[in-house]
Length: 306
Ligand code: HSE
Image 1 (cartoon, rainbow, N blue to C red):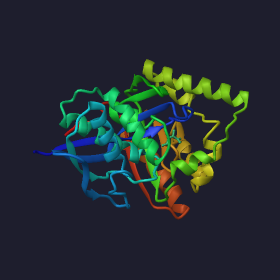
Image 2 (cartoon, rainbow, N blue to C red):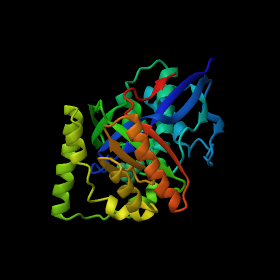
Image 3 (spheres, rainbow, N blue to C red):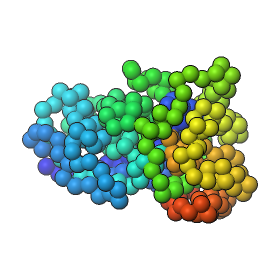
Image 4 (cartoon, protein in one colour):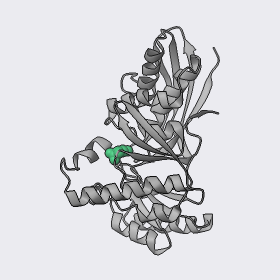
């Protein structure tokens, strides 16, 4: 049976105030999964990654999601997977979600494409839940592309929000790992009414901004009063990097997912984006941390054959 090759983009979950409910896919970084049909069972025969990843099919999100899709299809066939990681783990760029999205997409494609990308979200969410937590703000945008509102995960209810044409995303990942499970433990069970109102107002503004293609509205709503104040201590030099980005022209900066990747916003030229990128990298380096970085945009396609 012949191989197919699937690409699933990295994602920025939360988009500032939208904890667990907003996410967007980004161009440039992502996972590639090769897959082919086998008689039965799921196997992983190759992983190319610069960080250790489980090849145990019960612990890898690509295989968990692929198996879920086969179950959903009621198909007793099998799949062999080969995974090439294109983004660092523990980076806040939806690494486990990208593998889950690619695994789910590959399984569906190999067995007749009977499910839509929206219908694959449930399988990918189950895989995410197995390794981190039950949330769809990485898996949904990775599968669908664009910005996405997750109204509910059980059952999956998604609103696709599109993209803002002029938006540039400057992503900088320092060489430390933050694990979502741990970063979630820093968040309180209860939030004051004042912060709840601010979070609702800002996440609604960001949602409306995507629907209206309104960059100014987007950047006016990025303040995150819930996660950022509690999680920034996991990211060395956070305040300095944020200040440096804003000083050279970024219009806002958020923690991507649970971090440590930081995502700055601009609607300037690529050259202006590069200036913001180097200012952020320089601050991290001053603190002793090397970085991977990119000036990117929203990926509008989502998980695909390539
Ligand atoms: N919404 C999740 C969190 C995203 O912030 O914990 C994790 O990438």
